[in-house]
Length: 93
Image (cartoon, rainbow, N blue to C red):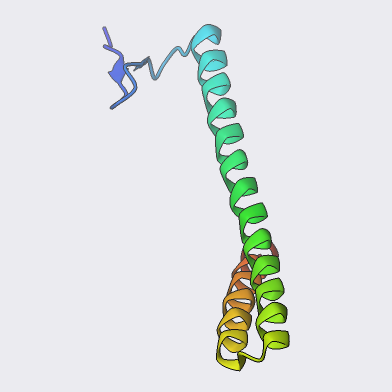
């Protein structure tokens, strides 16, 4: 009587009136795996931003003690930008 709706780009057929337990559990597993991958990418970006900020600060110290004050300023700007974007991402509501 009613034909299932085919979901685009997934190959799944969704029967609006009777969604079987197998289909819903398969869908939830797929969503949880996708969420794990997204959390991994977010974690790597967070750690990468922190590493870049620390490296910029260390490079600024090296440049400062060698007397190159323009490079010190540029490294501090890079570190501040990295830490600022990291804080924005972490503390956003």
